[in-house]
Amino acid sequence: MNEKRVLHPTEKKSFIGVVISNKMTKTVVVEVRSRVKDPVFEKYLTQREKFYAHDEKGECQRGDKVRIVPTRPLSKMKRWAVEQVLEKSEGIEGDILEAKV
Image 1 (cartoon, rainbow, N blue to C red):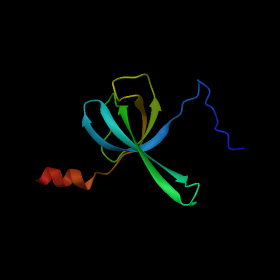
Image 2 (tube, rainbow, N blue to C red; image 1 turned 90 degrees about the vertical axis):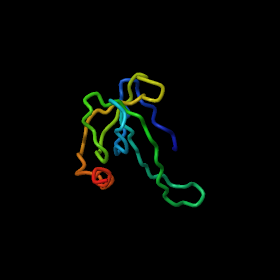
Image 3 (spheres, rainbow, N blue to C red; image 1 turned 120 degrees about the vertical axis):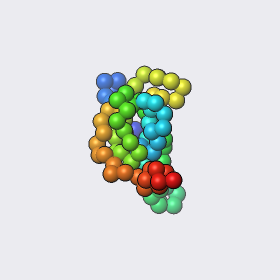
């Protein structure tokens, strides 16, 4: 009963995550968090994974919630593209502090 569902080639697997860096041109780093249950201790753990995603318009800022979808390899690390910005951030405190210094 613990069979993994195999995606059909026409189906897109997408992730929702938060932009943690946008310092590169047309590239953002998106952190995706997921909760999994430990098989031995039966505790819930939070796993993080970072994806380099293509942002053609350059509209993503740090803290934005975005949906990323797989794409053809665009560079050594970039295999994902930003499909949609779901929620814009109101600003990260680190950005404000960097601007004041």
